[in-house]
Length: 400
Image (tube, rainbow, N blue to C red; front, side, top):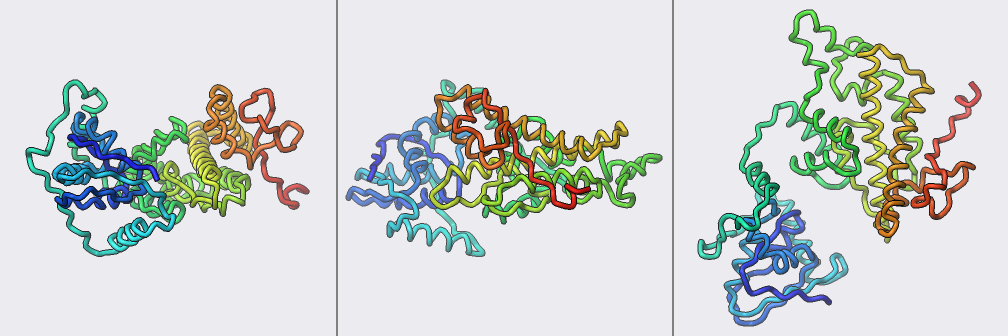
């Protein structure tokens, strides 16, 4: 077992998840003169109470999740006359104390009224502000934004709720508003699609009801294909009878490897929350699950954005797209992401983590130039020609 000694000086603590909140509530802070060694399965909490504590206090706890709980625990630990060490144990491994803590945490989440936790810290223990020598422009900006109260538009609040409950069945987590906004900037999503999702959540596009109150332009609020339907973003991406929409989602569904689970039905909430999608972990293969989740985020985001781009070309430019053109553009969009990943893996070939991420993301949907499974070094060797493997058309389509 690895042990972490509590540093006997003022140090800060970090906040993040529900699990962290449970872990930070485990040390009881009693003034016993006997040494204490509580078992904890979170290295994040242990490091927060030891290694990172002084730095977090020096920056005034700016940007630290669950800071209130960490500060209270640090105060309780410092007032103990006896030393405290933390013993790391593997989570969900049958450790009696850890299993009981998980059970208590689950019981607490089911209570209609949450428990009141004493987080009082006396002024002589409560370090205020941040040191000028440690403050940066980024930290100062975070501090200002934290004190800024944002009033969201009603449509934005509705979309946040729709997103939250749409991705819950996939990720098994009910995400917060902050997590949804953070998901818009997921690195697996390209910059232009990040902005597209962000603007959609803020209802910033001039479509649908935007045109309804403007005289002589009311007709723009209706979908040109479905006629009587208001053309909001949900209609464009999920409900419209535009053939391009159906073709693109069918292509994404057809290329999705069935061993990763069923393909989720297109939904505006899943599209807006695709940056937060995380599939349940496969048995004894965390890397494979992470790769599948990443592939799902890429397929959903790229497909939705292409539907929006084709719609704009059709409505604004009057461009008609053939079925073959739509398929080629979708294949090019996905293949571009594949080749970008390969270029990054080739550049960082000394980092096995990057190569593993690329291989776990794409290995189930690619083939080489001879339509055979690619070589073992396809991710880092750019001389190996590989591309995505489209699903075979049905017999009726093939004989048309």
